Length: 188
Image (cartoon, rainbow, N blue to C red):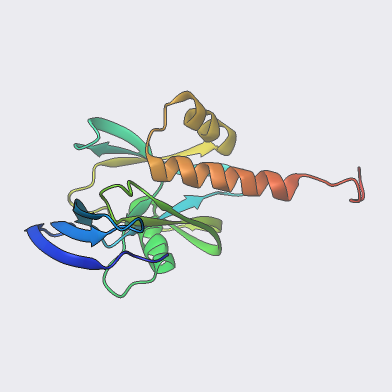
């Protein structure tokens, strides 16, 4: 991924999580434009799937989202932290789960028109329950649902969080692909 060089940057706000500025860039077509850009360190999310094909979802209160949302365990990447370390940490903190098997599901851009955030997605398996400690600003419930039900919720609009939609769809496709038998496979 290549980033367009910034010709000028006018800071507007620097907070605990985001940084907002007007950035002047030259686009690939030669046009110079001023863009309102929100810089974010990125995040990571885990699709934790147990042996019974149940996925861990958090019912989390989000003021900016207008109330309660269904989400995967996820969080912000700390300075110098690798995305997998973030996913591992957040799964333990928010859901009280550790995983021995991690499969990379790629990444996604949450809102690339104004937001630099990239979210890395992982499928976590071979799970073990452990103690968890949610942060002071987190209000959430931990739920385990059949993967099929979670995918139905993606399709019917019950789940609206983008990282959760993408993570569940990618995990579902991976699991279906692993379970499908080709004509050459024994047992067909």
